[in-house]
Length: 436
Ligand code: GDP
Ligand code: GDP
Image (tube, rainbow, N blue to C red; front, side):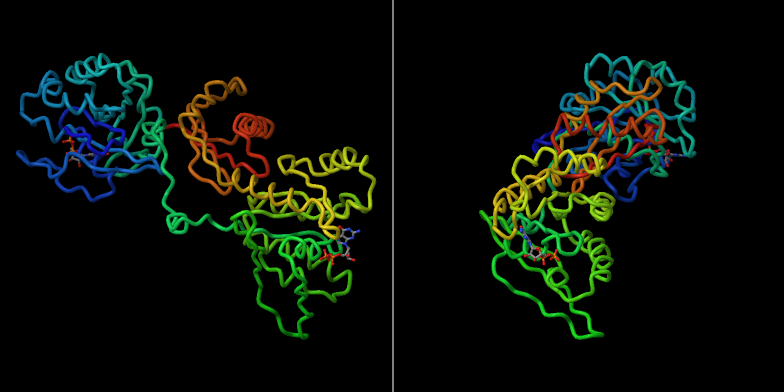
């Protein structure tokens, strides 16, 4: 069996008729080509390329290698499928969950255990939703990792693949812009109450005073995005028309700023929450910051007009913010003066770093070493963990049960992830799934 691709290899083994071919086709995402009970069928494919959550691998169905004679003996599989098993990084031992364990299953189990490779026992044809209890009988085969699936109805396949591919290398999906050698522009939204200095900060960041005159009553202006390039990186400031537009009454503006913030955050990767240093953090600052958190966007807290405060107040101010915005504890705080253009470079550096974290992916291998070190409430157990997506970083914990973690436990896990992998400035999303 060639391994020309250099990809990790997953091999499916099992007696005839347990559903290998069905599983093979289900994983490769094609209609089952030739399966069924007709004797003497030939399978058209025994090897294929698959990808699960950005982890590519090569899948081999040994059913296509071992002749399906009436007299099927496990030793045969060793001889015929030897090459496939030799290149296997992961083995899926498939068994029919609707029949008793046969002596052939037992013999095969023993052969596979002796290979010393990671084997996942997949109990197939469990076509019902509540599948856990139906697999317990199969633990006697001596494999630690037992999962139930229905190849035909595509149940439990995601969990099976999450598990089997957990240590495989992830490949970033090719982004057309990145492929063209361009870094993705970082989309930034400047949010905050009226008069905190949003429009002054925008000027300091993009340069040039381009005030947009109040729109004529009854008309709305389309949103205007402005951009700037700093150290080879492009920043897009979303809906700056709203920031530059002036001339509302104060009360109206206060409400508008909240509505606008909510809308603009969705269009951005990173929100800059501007706070007026002379007023300190106030209630609506927290409301606006909360939107960024809820929308899963990265955040940098900008304390503006710092030129009006003595430098020795910094620690105290910082503590104030941490006390008032407990849920935004991951957001870096930058002290600056938009008017005097002080702290602007540092702000750009923070934005670039925070974006990196927002877009950061931890390999499943690293995550599983991390899981081994985590100690949770005594009655909950994490089996493994993956990070299926970024922007924001989203982690899936496969646990004994699918119910959510206790709030404090969830916080604890998130804090441990931060401590271990460093996700400054970005919210982290945790999802819990039951390992079935
Ligand atoms: P293989 O030759 O051992 O790889 O098995 P096949 O994939 O050819 O499947 C054997 C039979 O089992 C076929 O009739 C399939 O339709 C059936 N089968 C496969 N998976 C399932 C399943 O999840 N549930 C049920 N009920 N039948 C299945
Ligand atoms: P916006 O309503 O949030 O867009 O706030 P503006 O940018 O219009 O600023 C409101 C007022 O604060 C203006 O008078 C600015 O000159 C002033 N201002 C903005 N940034 C600073 C700063 O860093 N220091 C000082 N002292 N004043 C500032």
